Amino acid sequence: MAAQPDPAEAVVRLVKAANEGQRRLMQWEELATLLANEIQAVRAQLGGQPPEANPEPEVHEDPESAQRLDSIFE
Image (cartoon, rainbow, N blue to C red):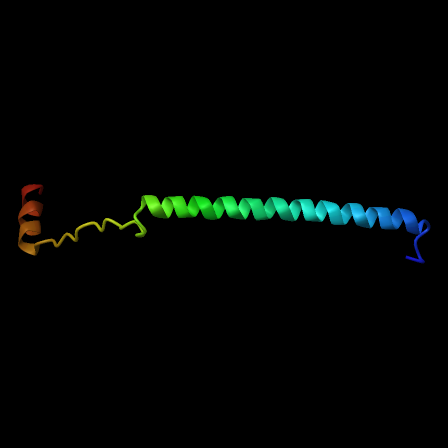
């Protein structure tokens, strides 16, 4: 503080910065709370279960059938 040309002004700037930091922290905390509530609502809609992926059925090609198809289109 002694290196500041106006120590009182430096204190005022520090207090303003601290107040702004506190205000932003409160905004982030509010945002985190809203996000947590939204996640809980989505989980409740899903019944507490993660969404199931619908696997595509495996297709096994019959080599004999493939040869017959190839011969049709030759």
